[in-house]
Length: 399
Image (cartoon, rainbow, N blue to C red; front, side, top):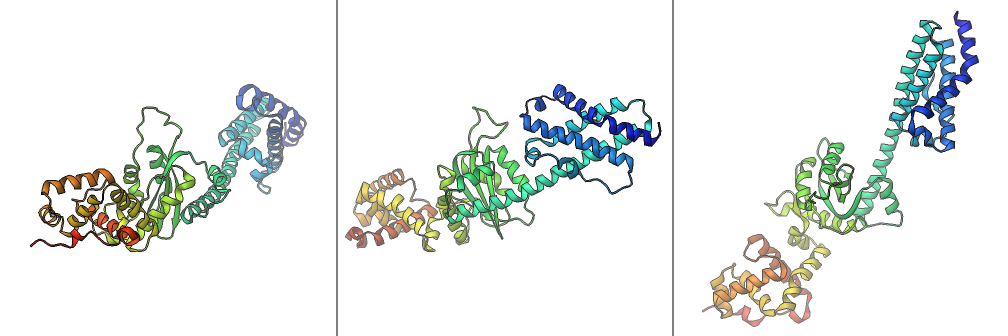
């Protein structure tokens, strides 16, 4: 059979080939049998277009190269989203198998043409999906940047939850924001892989030299294990630290849900702006450990936090604790000098300082925490009319 006869024969059996291909798909591919009728019809159109395109190519292989879009043009756009690349390659394999069976005995040239054409179709299909994935990735990156920017500015709206859902966010609970410097070569995929291993999901925002991670606890595929212990966010931050560039790394406070992440973001950004003022700041450092620097820089949230978490609880619990803490800090954290100023025994000072630590969770005997406590006392005294003047005992000096 010469080429002209072969082409005529192929055109006559093209319809039968398409029908046989669909029957084989239904028999051998469970995902095809479970498809809605409209999508199965679309797959049939793709198979028919592929057979027709092969006949055209076989007639003149040197003509203008066909484009993969020609094959998929007959199908609706949603087919590309509902049929994976793996399923598309299975479709190509079944179509080639059926065609090879029908042309068996028609000559090696035709069989070689089918193999060459099927190879090109497979590469073209991969190219179509790669372009779709690239476009999807660019769209996701823009959407992710928009979501992170909304969180940082606190300008959330009703569309934020839907945007977060569109990104495939797996978070289900607590969230914290991590702010640091952008490395020269940011490996976003490596950051996401590390996050998955830690059982968290991340939103990544790059703002010039600043890298922002919104970290949320997540139920990720392959990590459904009731015995898995959730790591604290400070440990998660330490594990993610290699993904940042040199410089300070600040972790915002934990909030209950992603929609409240702006609170953590504000604290982390304020801490990142002043972190250099703490010479020996750890990496990462929690934003609440930078409360004095933030307050001095004018951060209203830090001022409010210091007053509400330190000064007010102490003053409400016992004015003696406030007086003792003032004296202890003013006297260079000396127990004896504090005891002389307050006319009490040093053991009484020790007991009161212990009570201070129990009430507010900060230990005044440490140099860093002493700075935090003294800043809180100053702010509390400035902002409270009833305590604007310090107790008279604090103005006495030992003879």
